[in-house]
Image (cartoon, rainbow, N blue to C red; front, top):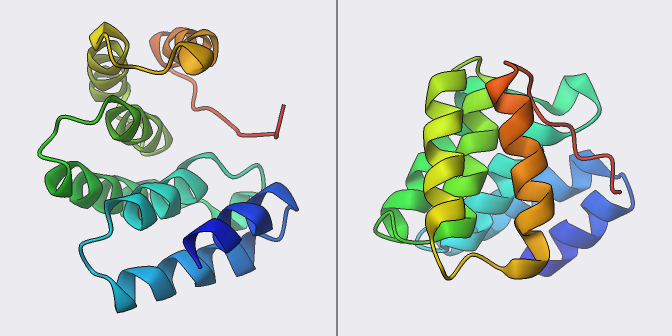
Length: 130
Protein backbone atom coordinates (compact mmCIF):
# COMPACT_ATOMS: atom_id res chain seq x y z
CA UNK A 1 0.00 0.00 0.00
CA UNK A 2 2.91 2.35 0.61
CA UNK A 3 3.99 2.09 -3.03
CA UNK A 4 0.39 2.52 -4.12
CA UNK A 5 0.26 5.69 -2.01
CA UNK A 6 3.18 7.05 -4.01
CA UNK A 7 1.40 6.21 -7.26
CA UNK A 8 -1.73 8.02 -6.04
CA UNK A 9 0.41 11.05 -5.16
CA UNK A 10 1.98 11.12 -8.62
CA UNK A 11 -1.48 10.81 -10.16
CA UNK A 12 -2.56 13.78 -8.00
CA UNK A 13 -5.10 11.63 -6.12
CA UNK A 14 -3.94 13.03 -2.79
CA UNK A 15 -6.82 11.78 -0.67
CA UNK A 16 -6.13 8.22 -1.80
CA UNK A 17 -2.39 8.63 -1.15
CA UNK A 18 -3.00 9.82 2.40
CA UNK A 19 -5.52 7.04 2.99
CA UNK A 20 -3.02 4.40 1.85
CA UNK A 21 -0.18 5.80 3.97
CA UNK A 22 -2.44 5.95 7.02
CA UNK A 23 -3.48 2.34 6.44
CA UNK A 24 0.15 1.23 6.25
CA UNK A 25 0.84 3.09 9.50
CA UNK A 26 -2.13 1.35 11.11
CA UNK A 27 -1.03 -2.09 9.92
CA UNK A 28 2.72 -1.57 10.41
CA UNK A 29 3.24 1.13 13.04
CA UNK A 30 7.03 0.84 12.77
CA UNK A 31 7.14 1.51 9.03
CA UNK A 32 9.24 4.69 8.87
CA UNK A 33 8.68 5.03 5.14
CA UNK A 34 4.91 5.29 5.53
CA UNK A 35 5.30 8.01 8.15
CA UNK A 36 7.81 9.87 5.97
CA UNK A 37 5.64 9.64 2.86
CA UNK A 38 2.53 10.76 4.73
CA UNK A 39 4.45 13.72 6.15
CA UNK A 40 5.67 14.63 2.66
CA UNK A 41 2.11 14.80 1.35
CA UNK A 42 0.92 16.84 4.33
CA UNK A 43 3.87 19.22 3.98
CA UNK A 44 4.28 19.66 0.24
CA UNK A 45 0.99 18.88 -1.49
CA UNK A 46 0.17 21.58 -4.05
CA UNK A 47 -3.50 21.42 -3.00
CA UNK A 48 -3.93 23.39 0.21
CA UNK A 49 -6.70 21.29 1.74
CA UNK A 50 -4.31 18.33 2.07
CA UNK A 51 -1.56 20.29 3.85
CA UNK A 52 -1.26 20.32 7.61
CA UNK A 53 2.10 21.60 8.80
CA UNK A 54 1.61 20.77 12.46
CA UNK A 55 0.56 17.18 11.73
CA UNK A 56 3.30 16.83 9.10
CA UNK A 57 5.94 17.76 11.69
CA UNK A 58 4.50 15.25 14.17
CA UNK A 59 4.45 12.45 11.59
CA UNK A 60 7.91 13.33 10.20
CA UNK A 61 9.38 13.28 13.70
CA UNK A 62 7.96 9.78 14.19
CA UNK A 63 9.73 8.73 10.98
CA UNK A 64 12.94 10.31 12.29
CA UNK A 65 12.59 8.46 15.59
CA UNK A 66 12.08 5.17 13.77
CA UNK A 67 15.25 5.80 11.74
CA UNK A 68 17.17 6.98 14.84
CA UNK A 69 17.54 10.46 13.28
CA UNK A 70 20.11 8.99 10.85
CA UNK A 71 18.24 8.87 7.52
CA UNK A 72 19.08 11.99 5.50
CA UNK A 73 16.05 11.54 3.25
CA UNK A 74 13.72 11.46 6.26
CA UNK A 75 15.47 14.49 7.78
CA UNK A 76 14.82 16.32 4.51
CA UNK A 77 11.12 15.46 4.83
CA UNK A 78 11.14 16.84 8.38
CA UNK A 79 12.63 20.04 6.94
CA UNK A 80 9.74 20.30 4.47
CA UNK A 81 7.25 19.71 7.28
CA UNK A 82 8.90 22.37 9.44
CA UNK A 83 8.75 24.83 6.55
CA UNK A 84 5.04 24.15 6.04
CA UNK A 85 4.51 24.76 9.76
CA UNK A 86 6.37 28.08 9.50
CA UNK A 87 9.38 26.79 11.46
CA UNK A 88 11.91 27.98 8.92
CA UNK A 89 14.96 27.97 11.20
CA UNK A 90 14.28 24.31 11.97
CA UNK A 91 13.67 23.61 8.28
CA UNK A 92 17.04 25.12 7.36
CA UNK A 93 18.77 23.18 10.15
CA UNK A 94 17.37 19.80 9.09
CA UNK A 95 17.83 20.42 5.36
CA UNK A 96 21.48 21.32 5.92
CA UNK A 97 21.96 18.24 8.09
CA UNK A 98 20.46 16.08 5.35
CA UNK A 99 22.67 17.63 2.68
CA UNK A 100 25.79 17.25 4.85
CA UNK A 101 25.26 13.49 4.94
CA UNK A 102 27.55 11.84 2.41
CA UNK A 103 24.87 9.19 1.97
CA UNK A 104 22.29 11.69 0.71
CA UNK A 105 21.17 10.53 -2.75
CA UNK A 106 23.15 12.46 -5.36
CA UNK A 107 20.18 12.40 -7.73
CA UNK A 108 18.13 14.33 -5.18
CA UNK A 109 20.74 16.88 -4.10
CA UNK A 110 19.84 19.60 -6.65
CA UNK A 111 16.22 19.58 -5.53
CA UNK A 112 17.29 19.50 -1.89
CA UNK A 113 19.49 22.55 -2.40
CA UNK A 114 16.62 24.40 -4.08
CA UNK A 115 14.38 23.55 -1.12
CA UNK A 116 17.06 24.84 1.26
CA UNK A 117 17.05 28.16 -0.60
CA UNK A 118 13.25 28.34 -0.25
CA UNK A 119 13.45 27.68 3.48
CA UNK A 120 16.14 30.33 3.87
CA UNK A 121 13.74 32.71 2.09
CA UNK A 122 11.02 31.63 4.55
CA UNK A 123 8.99 29.85 1.90
CA UNK A 124 7.58 26.32 2.02
CA UNK A 125 8.06 23.84 -0.81
CA UNK A 126 5.27 22.59 -3.06
CA UNK A 127 5.74 19.27 -4.83
CA UNK A 128 4.34 19.98 -8.27
CA UNK A 129 5.71 16.71 -9.65
CA UNK A 130 8.50 18.38 -11.61
